[in-house]
Every structure is written in structure tokens, then in C-alpha cells.
Amino acid sequence: MITPYFKLPINLRIQATAALCLSLFFLAQPSTAFAQQPTKAEGPAKPMKIELGTSAAFDAQGRLWQVSKETDQADATGKAQYVVLRSSTDLGKTWSAPKRVQAMPEAISADGENRPKLAFGNDGAMFIAYTKPLSKPYSGEIRFLRSLDGGQHFSAPLTVHHNRDEITHRFESMIVDGQGRIFITWIDKRDVEAAKLRKESYRGAAIYVAMSDDNGASFQPEWKLADFTCECCRIALSLNASGAPVAMWRHIFEPNIRDHAIATLSPSKQANLIQRVSFDDWRVDACPHHGPSLAFGADGTRYQTWFNVKAGEGSIFYAKADAAGNLAPPISLGSAQASHAEIMVKGSKVAIVWKEFDGKLTKIAARFSNDAGKTWLDKKLATTTSHSDQPHLIAHSDNIYLAWQTLAEGMRIVAIDAATSSDEAAKK
Image (cartoon, rainbow, N blue to C red):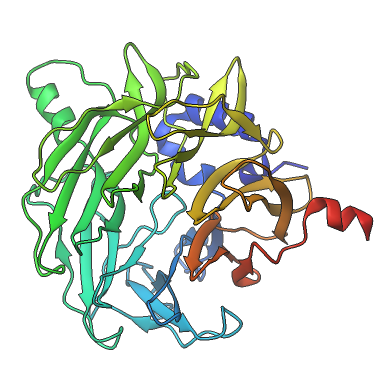
């Protein structure tokens, strides 16, 4: 029996990714399943990707929303794709019918590292961002649309960046600061292409940022946050204790060390200090499709999770740094199969979730703290035997929830506070 790629231990997946490089990107994604297109007379059926990448968020009234990708089944080409919106008033027990947010279909990326994003403005406006793949491999555009009436109507999609080259503009992330400004970051390869023309080398890609200060009606010209970043790992965004947006990403330090860095996004577009925040010294000439996660406490404490290979062993790590930036020793989380961790802070509560495969089940495990990370409880939140998205964390009021899309069960919403801890489960 051949073990499916997405069920391999994470170390083997990373080795395979390095060997096969980026052309096999979709195989590395546990969020991707395959269905068969109808068989045509002229040849055998071809596999069609089913992407499960989904984002969820609560609005100010406590209604839960999710955005995902839908392919029009009446279109035999599989190219008639839409971002669809659903809502729930009972914490995900039931959902509204999916609503297409674009009038016309277009290509949409919805894998685990590059899924549609959802956020809300201070006045309740709804913002959606996504990557539109283009015809060249690994090329794309960052698209954005908004609703000012609670999801009833949406603006036509606009392309966020002024650069229109058919190159990589992918893996967008989005955040709204306390002043209502929308920041969107993405992986961009315009500097790679420029270096090629100069016959110069360039490590990885770059991160660019665009900002809207008119509630999403338009975006100012983008600016570069960092050179020499990993080509296909998601960018983590979080507001620090001062309310400023901070990005964390996998950076390529000289000569080819793929550790992590952070920088603050400035509305003035000024260059900010790039600070290294992981020190695992992983040297690999490939992208692991495995971005970090970031959160801040009200006292300025920084909480972070990331994946790296250290001393030949792949692991997800957690660490926190005080307000002065002093980083505590990292802690390894989960088993050798642990992957795609995400972290969230709400008051004194800190939650970390990650994905593991035990040979039969894919499970979402969690570590939860009620005292800002001084003590922890280990929890098991959900399982599936089918394909699934990466786990995500959302919050409302004082509670933190897991939001996890699976092929078999659909969207799973689990209150982490109420979930049974591993110790409690062992006593039953």
C-alpha cells in the first residue's frame, strides 16, 4: 500500500519538497483533495483539485462568517470559480446558503497557505482578499473586494498592486489596524525578474505591502517590506500592543538560512528594522510551504509559532518574547508529524493549535493557557479521516475557537476553553 503524500511524516514531506521543488507544490498540501472530472470520449478523466482553504471571522455582533472557493460544476473546464460567503448565528451548527461575492467567475487560489482572507472594518465593513492565479506557473494577482451592507452586496474586485507584470504576486495576508486602515502583504517576484535582467542573483522573493486608508475604496501604491524571503510560506500578521500591524515571515538570511523575521508595517511606508526571531540555522534550497503564526499580549509580549528543521529534525516550535524582544528558549510541539501551527492571544488566554496524522486519523491538537503562557493544558480538539484545511483560530468576546474545514465534516467550530484536556480525557 502506498502512503498518500499528505499522510507522510512532516520530515519526509520536507525532503520530498526539496527534491521535487516547487513544481509539486499542490501535493504537499493536506488541504487539497482530488475528484475526477467527467470522462470524455477523447481520453481518460483528469484529476481536478478540490481546495479546502477557508477563512472565518466574527463580526462585531457575534455573527460568524466564512469565505471559501466554489467551482461551478456546470462548467466542464473547472475554470468558473467564485469566492463564496456563508454565515452562522449558532457558532457553526448551521450555515446560510453559499453566496457568490463576484458577479463574474475568475481563477481563485484556495490551498492552505494561500486561501481567501476575511476581515472587518471598524464600521462593520466586510473585506475579502484572495489570489487570482494567472496563466504562467506561480504567477498571480492579489484581488480585493468589500461589502458596506453586511454582505448583501459587494464591489467589483480590484487588483491591489499597481505592478501588473505576469509574475508572482501570491500568498496574501490582510489585517485592519485600530484606525481602520487595511494592510495587505504578499510574496512578490518583481525584484527577481529585475535581477535576472541585470544578470545578478537574488535569493527567494520579496514581500510587498499595500495600504488603504479609505475603507477599501482604493489602495495606495505598494512598497517593499523585505528582500530575500521564502517564496511560498504564508505571512503572519498581528497587531502589537500599540495597535500597529507587525508581519512575521520566513526570511532567507545569508548565505541560505531559512529562519524567521519580523517588521512593523508603517503607514508612512518607511523602511522598518527587520529583526530575526528564530535561530534554527536551517539551510535548504527549497520552500517548505509552511509559514509562521504571530500574536501579541496587551503587555507587549510577543508569542510566535513556526516550523523549521533543526539538527536534522523537523518540528513546530513555540516561543515568547518580552516587550523588549528578549526571546525565551523555544519549545517543540507535538509529534514528528505535527504541522501548520497557529497561535492566538485574548487577554490572559493563549491558544496554539496544530495538525497531526497518527497513521489513521488527522487530528487537531491544542495547547491552552489561562495565565499568559505560564502554565498549559494539552487538548485534542477534532479528528477526521478525510482531507482537511490547516487549522485556524478565531475569537469573539473572551473566547477563542478553532475553525477547521474538512472534506467529510465541513466547517468545524470548537471552543477551545470548553474542550476536554488530555489529562481529563485519560481519567474517563
